[in-house]
Amino acid sequence: MKKIKKVTIHAGHNPSGKIACGASDLLDESTEARYITRKVIKLLRKNGIKAVNCTVDNGTSQSDVLHKICTKCNAVADADLHISIHFNAGRDDRKGDGKTGGTEVLLTENVSDKGDIAKRICNQMAKLGFTNRGVKTNRNLYFLNHTKAPAILIETCFVDDKDDYMLYTSDRDAVAKAVVKAVLNHNKGC
Ligand SMILES: [Zn+2]
Image (cartoon, rainbow, N blue to C red; front, top):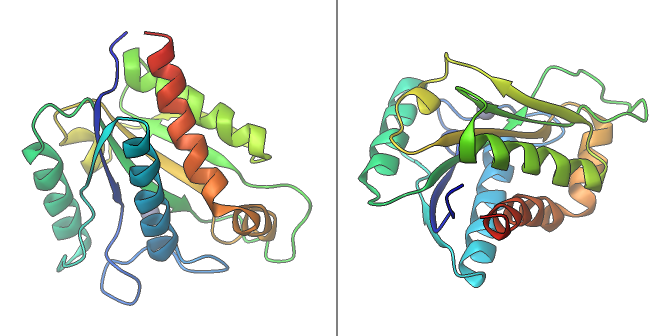
């Protein structure tokens, strides 16, 4: 396995309030994804891993946002991994039923370094109490299909589930730490 020395990371949508911003409910996807992105970058750098923020704030449409994100990602020389931060929607559980929707990590094929890191992220998030929805293959996502280095897309948790909301807002930084731990543990195993 390859050591991850340099990553790109970005929030998956335009800023809150603009066209093509993310899902907004109990949590605002665009805002939270930016928070997690910044925090992950800080923590990775502290641990000697290069991290480049490829978030796009000026997309004119969803496809323009995605196109610009991929252009930024692919302009970063020697990136070992591209990470996209998203939040999921569709649970429709605003009262809370005691069960989180949880975390899933998407990739085009569950192999090699990206497969290992994806699994590790799900496991680290499960340690925090987020339901482990697992690693899922998806070959229809623009970001995953148009980036040069191995790429993963994290659906952190659900914006419309009270249980996710409570757990997430109780310690946002723990979520960023979970992502960083996954990368560091991967590197330990190399
Ligand atoms: Zn999203």
